[in-house]
Image (cartoon, rainbow, N blue to C red; front, side, top):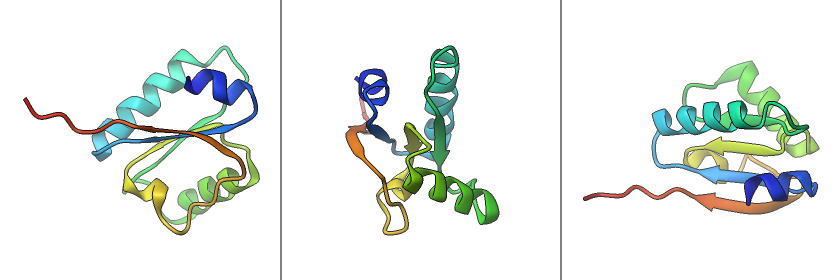
Length: 94
């Protein structure tokens, strides 16, 4: 669904419960979509300062197709140009 939305010109947000999981999902999306014209980025507590501002600017300009992140992606400072899909990867406890 994320690939379809991104290739149709919509942005995709993938909300995950932990910082480590956000990096794992980011790497997975990046590897799987490397052959396609899809830009993948991430937001979590490991990204700050200049890199955070650059990522936020790219999201707002529509230059990021898929963004993976923790609760940071639903914060006030994140402004999507054209969000078409929100995927929530909730934490499972067994």
